[in-house]
Image 1 (spheres, one colour):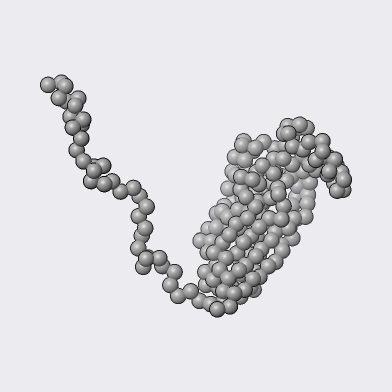
Image 2 (cartoon, rainbow, N blue to C red):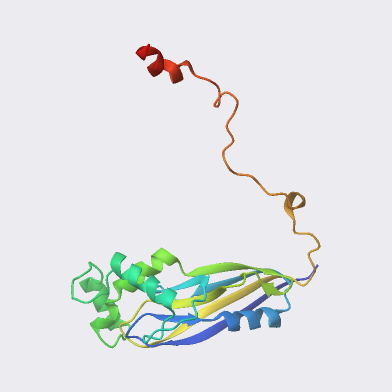
Length: 208
């Protein structure tokens, strides 16, 4: 059985004035085909701490902000939970030492560190997704797409998305667990839990 590892980087350009949602489904699908992996996994991971990777339904309708409706709904909810960084000292981060570090590494201004909202939103969603590859195809279902989200909107930036594909070139003959029987995880009451209890009749007997 041959085991393969295939790794690529996708360069993306975010616009900056509003969080950017990049649909990278087509690119990842193409990489899976080129990798030769028939059965395995693909890890799609952000290189950046203010970015996330999300698997979600393609909403199709696009508004004047160039966002799918579902994406804008998500952004509205995140803005309620984590407001856009609009005023200095709105958040504790960045402190004076971090701002000085930004100047030390060549940031164009202190404003580039005022992206605390992006960092916090990234924590909620995480920076990676792992997807199963079955018979050479991503197992994303009928509607799911892969999105790279840049929550940092203080400036337009070049971003990097890392894709690692691992698996085998061999066929998998039978994937069904327990012959495909449905696993019932619902609570099952024991006879003792369903038994008659004299307290059921207490109220009625007191009225006699």
